[in-house]
Amino acid sequence: MSARHRCGGSAPIEDASVLSVWPVAQQTARDQRRGRYLPASTAHPGKMLPELARTVIRAYSQPGELVLDPMCGIGTTLVEAIHLDRDAIGVELEPRWTAIAAGNAVLAREQGAPAQALCLQGDARRLGRGLLDELAGQVALILTSPPYGRSLHGQVKAGHGRPVEKWDDRYSRNPGNLAHLPSHTGRGGRASFADALAEILAGCARMLAPQGRLVLTARAYRSHGQLVDLPDQIIRLAAGAGLALEARRVALLCGLRDGTLVPRASFFQLNHQRRSTFERMLLIAHEDVLVFTREPQHAAPPEEAGR
Image (cartoon, rainbow, N blue to C red; front, top):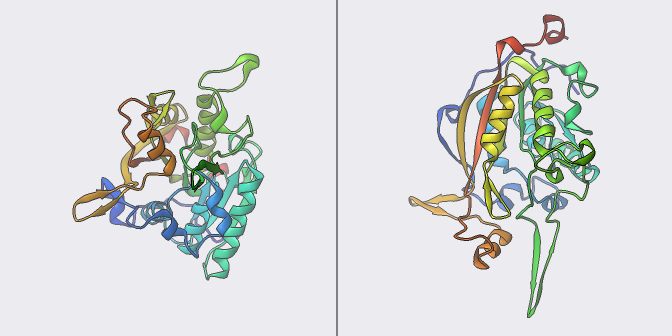
């Protein structure tokens, strides 16, 4: 990893930083990734849209700065950051996605990306406490999206009169993955989803440069028929980690054509709707983009920020 990144903060440099709604799905996800990502990338069921990553990176960082994704999946943040001349580091818990993220970063470099990326297998809960300690207080932008709940994405194949085959519709089978943690602290002290996410947010606060920003993309989702307001939960947990909400944007997951919304729902979402799995189910067509800054009283000590 190059040492060229600036340690100071960055100001928004694109109009996206003041817009309320970002149309990031004018092209389908497949078209956005075609030729830019390894074919194996399609296996991940919860990928961030490349255009969403590009929009955030342009708006909240500058060329030469350092971008971190502590739950990087297939490395979308890394790929788009180094194409935009920002060095990038990714952390990913699952070995399968770590390998694909590293491969995507290599492909980006082969395609002429001017910056460098590094992807590590590790647990984001350890940020600044044994993981990437040397970068504490130096990251201009942290961009990530937490895994959560049961996925409604994946690969399917419909056979003539045969049951639908589906695969790659889960982040992992690892019970320690954030997506599989219980909603409440379990027996034996097993951490809850909120407990683990709070640890990750605290680690992100340790990594941010004084004027840096943490940007999380998340959407509400349904669990057992009930709507879970994950963005609101993140805002409350972030406040406990010393992070202040600076802005809340909307990233459209549907296209816009002649003033009309063009759905981009997955097969699984449509199938649940047709089967009336959830009463009067409405398909969620946007993600919240939550932008946080570090509160002054939680700033890193001078010797730590200057390392």
